[in-house]
Amino acid sequence: MSRPATEPVRVLIAEDETIIRLDLKGLLEAAGFEVCAEARNGEEAVRLARETTPEVALLDVKMPGLDGIDAARRILEERPLPIVMVTAYGERELVSRAVEAGVFGYLVKPFRETDLLPAIESARARHQELVALREEADSLAEALAARKAIERAKGLLMEREGLTEQEAFARLRKASQISGRPLKAVADALLATLA
Image (spheres, rainbow, N blue to C red):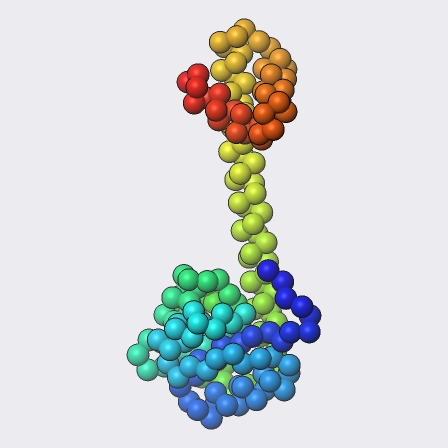
């Protein structure tokens, strides 16, 4: 789902400190981003992520109630998007929890625009790589499932009809062409009928 190049990237900011939230908003808008929502806590961030469909989220780690890492986890369960954690804490335990939650970037306060924009772009690039890998894995899994079904159907035809492997495959291919159905669908139907 791509958008025209002229539309700015939509960003959700979740930060309980008003001054920092306003600074983030100013930096992002000056850089051409659209701040589509601002949250003061993790619960609000989860709700606003659902309602405003941002393309990137910046979440403070330490917020009242639901912290940023748990908010990130909930957001990602509903809709994958690149998330950058913003925090004054560089503790390994927090970084580890953020990575486990699926966060794509980590920015330590105080930060400058020269830190913020690369963190967002890096998170967006890593997110796109993950999406592409998942699509490729799904495609490979489908191809493997099709191959297994076709091989089992060929084996069944060879056993029941006394055909060679090439003849069994030719029969499956012909049935696919005549019916206009994919080879896997023909193989699945044959297996369901004869097995």
